[in-house]
Image: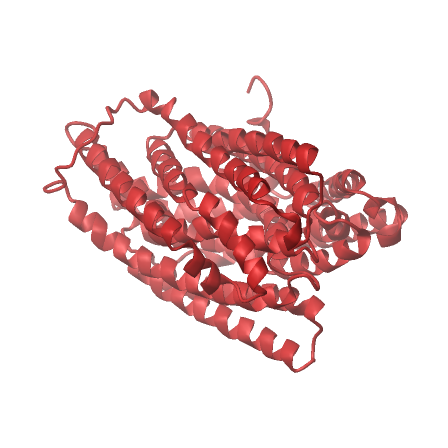
Length: 537
């Protein structure tokens, strides 16, 4: 557990700094293009999301589901996995170059598929897309290198490299604001030079992010070199595993595209695509810092135990990881709910927009606990080399997302909900779909490896809920004492961030105090994990 604790601390610290600088990056970006009711923000949101979507289609699922378990297995080879990894990297780079080139050429069509809006706004989105699409190659190289480092238990660089990306973007966006002013929210405000500056800055950050990982490759002890002899090292089996994750990514991408097209109807009139992305960014802050930092080392350990056929240890890993994750996630969820309005104000231009964005964020938060469980459950399937089952329950979730998005659209068209609530309705539908998906995935894993000790999770969750609910109310009380939605907490972005920190601290103090009174056993292990973050530990 000490090695897991150290790994979690390294990942958690890097993720925390990465997310904080990412938040600063987004705050500066809002100053350049706005957020709610901004046509330019929605255009850039569509364009900058496209490389992420295309990349997830061809690579993210494959890397997460296949590369780590395969590299763990290849490490047992006589050469330590050198031949396999070199061939894999060569093949991956070739595929990424081809896909990035094709996606860049297809930018107008991809924008048309992703959004249904004013022709001028779509033209601006297409112009941004030409600059952003090359990110696919460098996102892929970053993920390929990072997952290989993780598989060799070198966890730090993968989580710290995005900090460099964020810093480059912050400087670039500040220079754009200094030269061109802002926020530039209307489509006619944008010239080709402005588009090149914003799109180029976003892509440059990703290029450097990937390059940073190469500096740490020597620590793997592997010699990475081009190798086009792809036969005879088991890449066929890897390809078969990757096929299911590719189909899974297609299902998720299709659902996300339909969501985006429907949400784009609110562009310029209320919370739309850009607001959903900013709300998702806040949602992902605790998920990334907590779930990824603790869950990623567990995934490597689960992969090792699964490869050795030690199912009992896999079940123990699942139980320990989920209980630990619940301890932190319950507090984070209570804190964000209590501070939802000032937290949303950080990414909006005024207090009224913050309330609209807060509604979207609340709808996403419904699925925070289920997605925490899903992270471990899904990766346990991957550890056993099973990518087909995750495809089926992801396909089921994607279908539910499409249905709920269409229901939200019908409610809007039928004047049951206003256009300002469309994005929130779509977010709530996604949360419901993810919750149902988690229940189905857990049941399937139970059938695969036997008892998952679910009663242990639920007992721990009940204990955390008893502490988190009053802690959340205490945080909301602090928000009201600070003036509420009409007070200083929503008067500016900076004050919104300060208020969020104050409210969050109040929630955490009450949460820990209640658990201490209950003598919760998780406090001891959680305290040991937190101490790993402290200097000199």
